[in-house]
Structure formats: C-alpha cells, structure tokens
Amino acid sequence: MQDVTDLAFMRVIAHYGAPDYFFTEFFRVHATSQPERHILRSIDENDTGRPVFAQLIGEDLGHLGRTATELLRHPVAGIDLNLGCPAPKVYKKNVGGGLLRDPARVGEILATLRAAVPGCFTVKMRIGFEDTAHFDRLLDLVNEHRVDLLSVHGRTVKEMYRSEVHYDFIARAVARARCPVLANGNITSAPRATAVLATTGAAGVMVGRHAIRNPFIFRQCREQFGGAPEIFRPTLADVRDYVERLYRATQTPELPERAHVNKMKKYLNFVGQSVDPAGAFLHDMRRTETEAGLFEVCDRHLLAEPGREFSPEPYPGVIARPNCETPDGASCSLDTITA
Ligand SMILES: Cc1cc2nc3c(=O)[nH]c(=O)nc-3n(C[C@H](O)[C@H](O)[C@H](O)COP(=O)(O)O)c2cc1C
Image 1 (cartoon, rainbow, N blue to C red):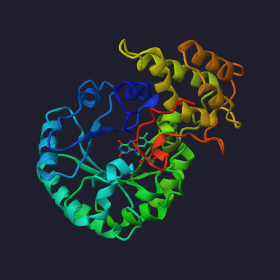
Image 2: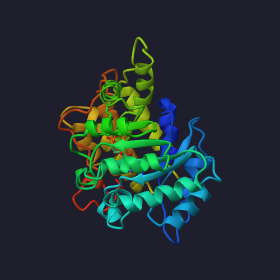
Image 3: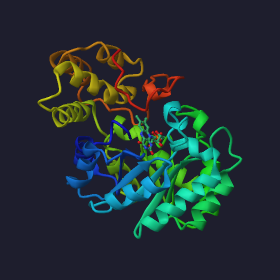
Image 4: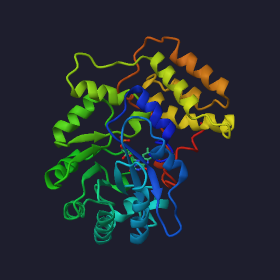
C-alpha cells in the first residue's frame, strides 16, 4: 500500500507475524522514472524473512520493461503489475485502474512484462473500471501471457474502497484463470479469510487495510488455517505495544515531531476502528499534535482496561477516513488526515 508498506511497516508487521509474501508500494514508471529509492529500501534491506514482490504502475511498454529488468537486479520475489489504483489523478493518466478500460493495451503490457521477467510475474487487478464488461477478456489475457499469480480486488475502480466486495467475481477469476488467485477486499479477520476462501475457491487472501488495523491478522490466519486449538486474541495492551513499536520504527531524525504524529494518525485511523464502539479513541487521537499528546491518548484509551479484547472485526460505524476515499481521490496517500 502506497505510503504504508515501507520497510519500517513491514518490519513491524513481521514482528507480530508476517504474511507469506509482501508487495511493495508501487514504483511509478514513465519516461524519466528511476525506481524510487525509499521503495528500493523495502527490497534491499528486507529482513522480515519473507519475500517481497516489486509492484509497478505505468503504461509505457519500453519503460515498464526497462524498470522490470532493473528491479530484477534486486532481491525481489517477482514483478507485480498494478491494474487497480482508483485515484483519478492516476487513472486519468491511463495507468493503474485506468488501464482496465483498454484490454488491448493491457495485452501489450502483459506481453512486454512477460518477456522481461523470466521468473515470477504477477498482476493485481480490480474487476473492471466502471463495470465488469471486460473482466473475462482480461482474465483471458492473464492466461495468454502466462501470468504466475493474480490478485483480484473484488470491486470496480469506480467503487473505490467502500462498496460491497463482489466475491462472486473473484470466484469467476478462480474458475477462469490458469494461475493461482488471491482474493482481496475486506479480509477483516481470520474467520473472514476462511469464509472468503471457501466461497471463492481462491488459493489465498491478500490483506491491506486490516493489517494496519490489526497487525496480528497474519498470525491469526496462520493459526486458523492450521487448525490451532486457539486463535490469538490481542488485548488493548497489545495494541498499545503495536503503537509504540510503529512510532519508534517510523521515527527518523529528519521527520519533525508534528509530521511524525500526523503520519501516525494515518495508521491509527484504522487501529481506532477496533478500540471502542463509539470511536472515542479516534476522536481524541485525531486532535493530538505532539508525541506526548498522542501517547497520553493511547494510555488513556488502551491502558485503562489493558486486558480488554481488541475487537477482531471493526466496530460498525467507526469509519477510517483515508483521503483516497475522497471524491476527488487526489492521491492514495493518507498523509492529509489530521483530525
Ligand atoms: C492507503 C492505501 C494505499 C494503497 N496502495 C496500493 C498500492 O500501492 N498498490 C496496490 O496494488 N493496492 C494498493 N491499495 C489497495 C489495497 O492493496 C487493497 O487492494 C484494497 O485496500 C482492498 O483490500 P483491503 O480491504 O484488504 O484493504 C492501497 C489501499 C490503501 C487503503
């Protein structure tokens, strides 16, 4: 996830139980692009013990091929193509989710990347742009160009992040694609992952926002899939530990305190969905401006009853507000959340 899945975040997640694979933030590809250095760090310095795929977003064939070749010199598990980003700023350039309007172009891109990537070449896609008219054609292209793994976010681009997830389309991808399919969208918990695997027949699940909310989700999934007698149930004290670890991991000498606190709010915006049903933690957290203020709010809400369970599912009506859900969708970044 852009502005989220950097090296610091991956390390924190790995501490609580890593997923099988990570995917980087997307590398932007165009005529003058060079792989972004901070994203390269999440590959070159990846010490999580889990492989990481490098994700690309772009539409220029030559530069996509060039970038894939460059990235293959780094320790990547494979190259992943973004066919899903719904931010208008992105799709208006005909990249990310915008490409789903143009299957012919998708075919050319898949052919180019397949030729450039001798190892694992993967695709992350939504089920369409405005509607699902091209869905089957896109799946046929995935087959034609021998994509190795397909992650399907079961929404159209226009549906952004909040609509129901169309798991029936993920099941359709599983039936039609010759490669393994990962189901993505609202995998909120281990029981939810199990249910989605059962209804879609997918080979696995991809988890986005709910890993920010609950970094224990991969451990819980692993326990549940393995038939463990008990699934780990984090308490509010465990969540206080997560907040502290995330704060320290994302702290750099160049980052001013106020900016760091604002950065934390983008994560805590999700965490707050499971702290209390009234959203009181979220309300107070969004008003903090200093490290001391932020941790005072954390202590008040997370350590008053430290043994209380962190809700496995988000409380209904407690809404995270990433700005990628705003109508203008100016960017996928959560950086502007302050209150
Ligand atoms: C802040 C944010 C950044 C994202 N960045 C990316 C990205 O760079 N590449 C990508 O394929 N998907 C990105 N996504 C989409 C997620 O990977 C995922 O498909 C979507 O949020 C639905 O899954 P979830 O319900 O598990 O979050 C992003 C989502 C969010 C909320």
